[in-house]
Image (cartoon, rainbow, N blue to C red; front, side, top):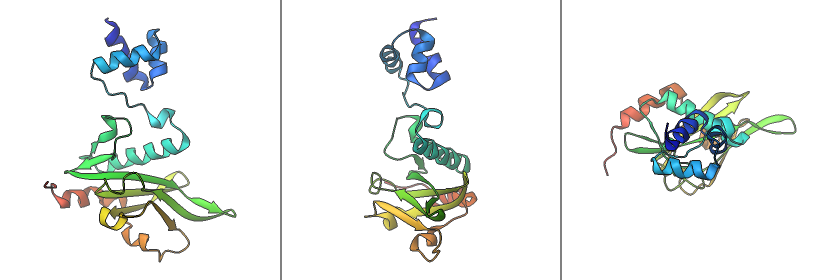
Amino acid sequence: MHIQEKCAEAYEKHKHLKLAANDVGIPWQTVYVHLKRAGIAVTGDKLRYGSDTDKLAARAELLFSTLVPDAINCNAKKFQSKVDFVVNGHSVDVKSSRLQEKNGKPTRLAFSLKKQELLADFFVCFGFVDDKSSHCLLIPSEIAKNYQTMSVSITNRSSKWWDYEIDKNDLADFFNSLGSKSF
């Protein structure tokens, strides 16, 4: 087997440059060069190797892709793409948050929009409580515009963000109802 094929096979198995390099027995930099020459996107695997925040984000992205199977995962093609998904031409960025506590009591969910506020057509925000997604907000870009962060109170359901709560099982129907985006 050619070295480029070995690198591709090892990277496909691990989705981690250093582990692939260990399998092949060459430096990770050389594995990277072979992957780029072969046209293989080096994207990594945040779910297995990322920080706690990366792992939570990856779980939310996986959940979205399961709920909206027609969505194109932009992160599969490029590491840290500008938006996470495209659905019928609409750009979607998926956000995640664990329930934040103050004085031992659950108080809020916090989502950062600052990098994508001008790029995404929609934000899908999953709030995780006890490691299960229990809240889903669907925010159109027009509403999120000029917000770099969203703080969603759990104790005060009169917050404007709760107006955008949606049953996560309705996401696919919503995106299908939009039709294709015309440019």
